[in-house]
Amino acid sequence: TKGNEYMADKGKDGKSSIVKRFDYMLTRKATQMNEPTITIVGNLSSNPEMRFTPNGVSVATFNVASNPRSKVDGEWVDGTTVFLSVTCWRDIAVNVCESMRKGDPVMVIGRFTQQTWTDKDTGKERRKDEIQGDMVGVPLIRHTVKITKVVRDAPETTASKTAETSGAKAK
Image: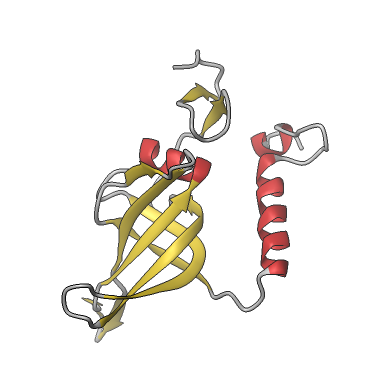
């Protein structure tokens, strides 16, 4: 459709990259029944940290602070701040680390997971709640963004090259 850059960027199968991503998520969801999905909107409370698995898969972790607000007697009142850890994999991890910093607004859609383990020092059972981020973006209610298309030489382990949609040279 004219004026829609996402639809203009179609692959050989006629689907845009965003449509392909949603198709993937829907297909994966169909095979992983009853997995809780969560959306959180807030601000990054830490800079994203990148690491790599032994197989070279990129992993980014960061924290999101979400502060609910409500009106009480005509005045805005802050609620209790919720902090959640987020883990993203592969291309999303690379894009998050290249694009976002502490304090930036963020919206994460992902799967709510809990990790449990026994603390080696105390012997107590421990638990960590986190989101496995499937999609990360900027809430556009109070912000604007400039879209930059990412071109990668090979799978997620290589450094990315970016080329602005306006046709600027790749970095």
